[in-house]
Amino acid sequence: MTHAAPVIGITTYGRNEAGEFCLWGTYIDAVRSAGGIPLLLPPGEPHLDQVLSRVDGLIFAGGGDIDPTHYGGEVHPTLYKLDAERDRFELALATAALQHDLPLLGICRGAQVLSVASGGRLIPHVVDVFGNDVVHRVAQSQHTHHWVNVLPDSRIARIVGVTTMEIVSWHHQAVESAPPGWQAAAYAADGLIEALEHIHHPWAIALQWHPEMSASYDPLQQRIFHAFIAAARSRDLAIAPTQD
Image (tube, rainbow, N blue to C red; front, top):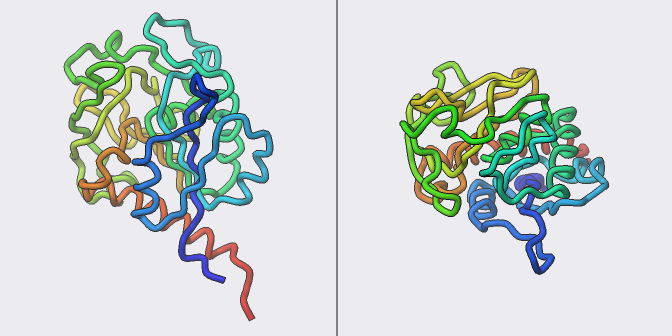
């Protein structure tokens, strides 16, 4: 038996009008390129313990907004793609996963899911708080690029080997402040939190940006996925049964 390729669960978008679940292939490509086997996890799965027992790591993918009722927020006119089924599933999965030693990677909405599951709050619309000095999203259907500053003593800095890097950004909401158990690891020039790291969990990182969108050509984003897969592989080897 070989444990060289860890299985990575990736949450998908909610049901579309045709009742289909889907996910951008860039998530799958990034996991495969780093040596993992992607396993898509659509919303609605009730058997969370069995999911957690069958994967070596979890990626919480991007997507629409989280319903503000989950973090005591107010309805904002810019909210879009609210999905009760996806919120319930991902928040429950995140809460359960944080109690395990599975490596966790939150991406954009996924970073917000991990934050809300940990008792954090979100900024409903970034422009209302930070203005337009840094453009975090050109339009609902269009991403952009900007630079982030990585704290030099953070896990992310050790992974990427730099303290400033250009990232792909596509969001209008963000984590308000580091929730209990987490600490900020990177900021945009306007002060917005761009990355969080869990203080006690063995490997839990939440990125407000989209590393999967540039992992095919950006070595720094590739390093994030390779570090994540390496952590999942190490866990897999640690729990593998002894072979005679």
